[in-house]
View 1 (cartoon, each protein chain N blue to C red):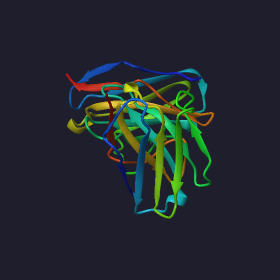
View 2: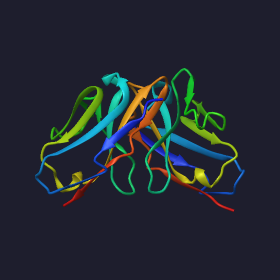
View 3: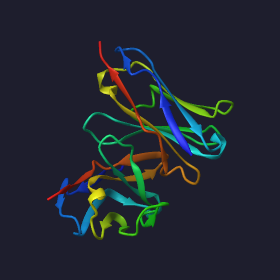
View 4: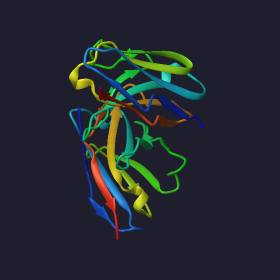
Length: 117
Length: 108
């Protein structure tokens, strides 16, 4: 199973961040999927997850701005984050696991997103 | 909200040495939902341990995890040159993930 993030590298404050994770080598309907981000030089931060039934959970700090969805026809899942600020500058990772929602075995390489005017 | 505190912040070791990393939870947690990751510069995290003590696929047996309640450990029995990295513990509860702040294992 391989994951690949795609999306804009640069955004302006107040814009909406949209990232897509393309899954190859496995069915998107059989996994638990998550998004994790890492600001430069800082710790990993969980954003949220979605299960194979479409049920979502989000970090309390991002819940009001984040949306995760799955497109089974394209074997992709996505993250939308509204009203971005410089604090949202980070490497964004998509991740997944076939057996558990409590961790992820498979990770994408990461996509750097910079928010700057 | 559960807070995970990792110690030490930095652990200087030499290849061949044994390293023990600590992850302490602010309240008692289920060990079945504790995991450890390794992250090297410019790379995605790699799952090492899940369920507190189970090695993920492809992980060498020099990595071992343990603990219960509030205290969890990751032990590297004999450090190889490729093991120097930042290690994070992770806990899942109430439908959320929480990461520790990380321990950097560096060359002494």
